[in-house]
Every structure is written in structure tokens, then in C-alpha cells.
Image 1 (cartoon, rainbow, N blue to C red):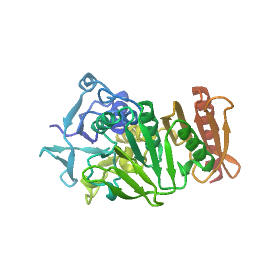
Image 2: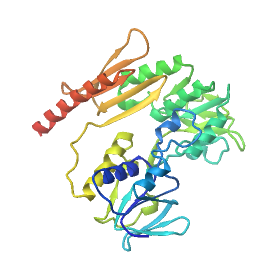
Image 3: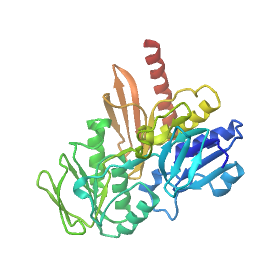
Image 4: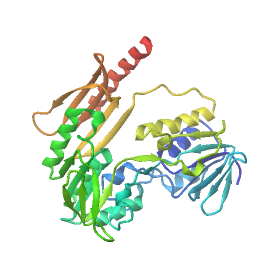
Length: 357
């Protein structure tokens, strides 16, 4: 193959890099290497899918001169500017974008059981759908955004759901008030939520029949989903010396959110073209659960939250303040206009922060 830009990984960061390059007039060789062509991962925890949520149809890549190579990266030889794939193929590059995303953290106590899984790929989603029969007892270990999305999705399909969170509250980064409110909403939705006690033991032979928590609580279960977090998928290039021809974007950097992956992928394209970075935007993330879309702009960590809950319905708004100024806004069940207004408030805060620095 002709060297040029090689992108390893088939996710949002890879796709946005390609789109930005072509939109800005770059016509050089671009190759994406990954197990599948790029697809969007957030829908996997939110809805039943008959096929992967592809980011673009196959014809798009042909029309834009993007070569697709199927194979997982096994090793990086930065000195020779080559990536070795698991099937033995060796791909050369002039520039390399590493966008291999992240991998689920797995708990040693749950390793090896037939009815325990994580959720990262479309295949994982298919396995979970098969387990979510009406009345099935599903235990979600981990009360973060993905775990709560899974709990909500499983309840929509009629499963009996238990959420186990070792921390004393859900989503501690969002503050006590928001965590407590979401806990109440999930319990109203029919999920059982256990806080402050993690998995200490397992009963069962080939499959888990019961989880034993650290506080002695026993939870009978038919299927267990681990949602305790992810780590960057860096093992395949561990030890390699990354030079000025190697870039990273997306979850492999530890960024962890959809918007960050999109911005980083586009940012690498601009760097490759010698263009200045795009204007900075506030950090943001979103989540769909309980029939609500949660949208957060800014950084809520360590800030004081002021929670306002709708008198009717389940929508709410949390405004986070640090030293008297708005540092983040979390919206649930709000309009696009509300989100735009929140972004404007954060832009003002960022400008004040930069002028004070």
C-alpha cells in the first residue's frame, strides 16, 4: 500500500479526522485499520440494534478515497513506521493516528463465568439483548453513566434490574443532590439500587447464580453486566517510542466522552494540515436514561450544585458554581435552546478564567 496517513481504530475520532481532512481539501492517501469500519458506540447501551450504528455507509469511504483494512492492531514499530495487525499484515505509514479507544475494566471476582459480560462492541450488545428476556434478573455492577443507561434500557425490555455501586452514591462527580435525585428516579422506574457496597463474592459454578456484596447482601441473578469503567486500549503499542509522526485521539487518550473524541479527531486533521486549532469549547457529555436526555457542559467536579426539579415530569437542571461563577450546567429533559444558553454561560466563565490567569 502507499504510505500516507494510517488511522488505527474504528471509532468516532477516526471518522472525524477523515471527514475534516477531506472537507479541508486534503487528497492524500488515508487508511483506516480496525476490526470493523467506524461505528458509534453510545447507542449500544441505549437501544436494540439490528446492525452496528455505522458512522458512514461503505460507499462514503470509496467516494472519499479512504481505504479500509480489517484487522486489529497487534504491535507498533515506530522506528520502521509500520503497524502489525493480528492477521500478520504489516501496514506502513508516513503519519499515524492512534484511535483505538478503550477497553472495559473487568473485576477479578467475576472472571470466567458464562453469564457475565461487559459492553463495548456490537457483539457484546447482541449478547446482552439475548439475555434481556421479560422477567430476567439482570444485575448491573457499576452505577456510572453506562451502567445507568443499561439499567434503564433493561427495564424498558421488562427485565428485573439491580444496580450495584460500591461508592456511597451514584455519579459522585455530579454532586450529592444530582446523584440522590437520579437514584430516586431509577428506583421509581423499578430498579433496585444498592449503594456503598461492592461485590465481595460469587455463588455459582459455570454461571453466577448469586452475588454477595461486602455488606452481606445477596442478589440472585440470571445475567451480570460489568460497567465499572474503562481504560485506554494502549497495550498494543506499549513500549514504543512515539515520535512527531504519531498522534492520538479519542478514548485512548483518557478523554472518555463522545464530544471530546470528535474534537480531538478533527484537531489532529488540522495539525496534519498545519492549521491552527479550532476555538476551544467547554467540556461536555450526554446520556440517555429514563426517557430523559442528560446534557452537561463544563466541569462539575468539585463545584457546588444548585438543583431545580420540574414540578411536573422528571426533568431538572443543575447549575454548578465555583467561587461564585458558573462552571457547569447539567440539563435533563430540556430543549436545544436551553442547551445553547448553557453553552453561552460557560463561554463567559471560560473567558473570565483565561483573563484572570
